[in-house]
Image (tube, rainbow, N blue to C red):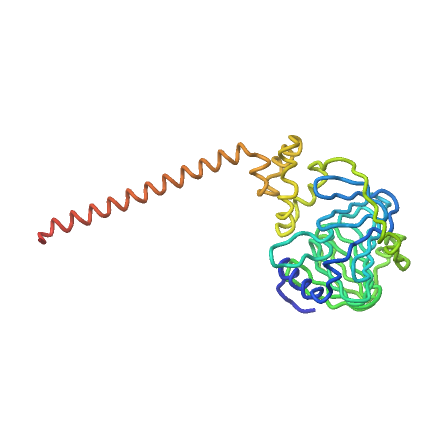
Length: 317
């Protein structure tokens, strides 16, 4: 192991360099190939029922229910299996000049398989793989990463920014409140809970839907609870979601009230979740600035008058 400094922004630059030579990442569609059980697609301000054949877009969010499984196929022959009780965003929007990572795994199960380079982010770690198949489970700062084949670089995003180079068969783990570890084989308790769909090779089905994409069925507008987990993430991820969802605070008073109650978790929502309080605070701050400026000018005038009086008292012409 060695130590290095990395941030979400620097990770995005690394991802950009990985895929800059592959225009397919920017042009080809990502397709939902398999849906088993209940899964939801959040696209902009609407919730949809996820279905096989749906073409995915930037900032799409996939959430799976207990017992569910989804497989998506990304450009570059990347197969992604999404296990139960998982939240994932496709190509989150990021700062100007940066290339978004293909995936951001907020929580849950993920299996990725590709013959080339692939990388994605999560709250606790970043994973860059090379001709690899990996299985990951994460909740908050805890994670388990198993490399079925190929190689991977695991970078922890907190606590010293540790980087681990992983080979086929390696198992990296950090339990809640514990020190990260890397072992030469997966823990039996991890293998016992791996989703059954992850135990076999992921089958590619995207070509079946490439020429006849399916439109997802709308379920209704998002509520605050639908997206609360994303509004409480790191600033680099949640701030670009504000222009996407702020209209809901205007249209839905329940959404606004819930966002207002959680302003400590996402203060950038104040102008939309508490417009009256925000306007009042801005007016108070403006008044304090005017008072400070008036005091500064008065002090400057008093200093100038004192200097003039000293000069006159000295008897100089």
